[in-house]
Length: 272
Ligand code: AMP
Image 1 (spheres, rainbow, N blue to C red):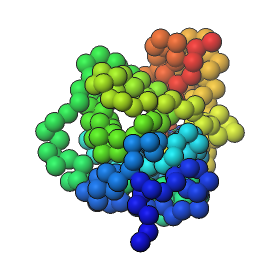
Image 2: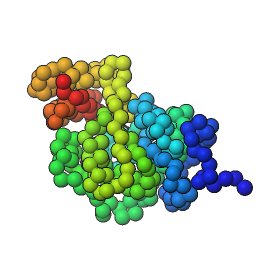
Image 3: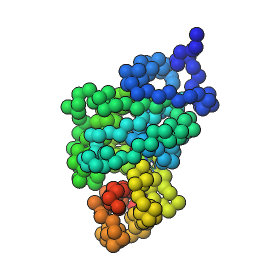
Image 4: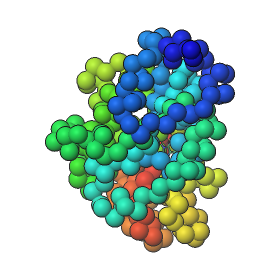
């Protein structure tokens, strides 16, 4: 008989040899999760797929720091306030499998809406302050959707550590504080923003830009880093054809959301 998962040594080297297990049934994943002995450290990286090197950096960190890494791929409809943005969100399942397997992920969960939302979104996690600013000011209900889906995923995976990119710093901070507020025994780990050589923050949405747009989009990082004030940075972006949704300093960071070629791009930097 093959050993149970609790008996398997999940230490890094052996994991890299093993094949990734894909779960589209959450019932099956929950049964699988129950077989883990408590001393197996689980790392979790939630994503919406269309994986790039930014995601891979989170996966690598998790693989490095844990015995078993779970990746989730779910394009969460409740966090999109714009239905077109949701339908146009890139889906690259086969390429995602290649990247995740090469990185050494152990399990992938890819639930359906009905599996994650048996309540059809009657129950929500709502934060009343920071979630209403920046990305939450224009995208009404965006962070309700984010926090709710992350809460559900954390309950399913029950990781020791969960990894989030600083590219979505507001999201990281809201999730970090949610986990603390609800006494969840999970370490929420921030990971630095991975950038193209041009400085452009890697993003699944970049694939929707033209070659020219891709070059121009690097100006976002340049201007928010170089300009002294938010007004100057916003003006420069506008002059170059961006529609700026917001450009604001908040705490020790400068945050921006701007549209280029109809694609919404976000970034943030620490203020020097
Ligand atoms: P997404 O699939 O866009 O929802 O992103 C999944 C996770 O990857 C989130 O925690 C993001 O903050 C993180 N992420 C996305 N892009 C980057 C990047 N360029 N660098 C680091 N982390 C990223």
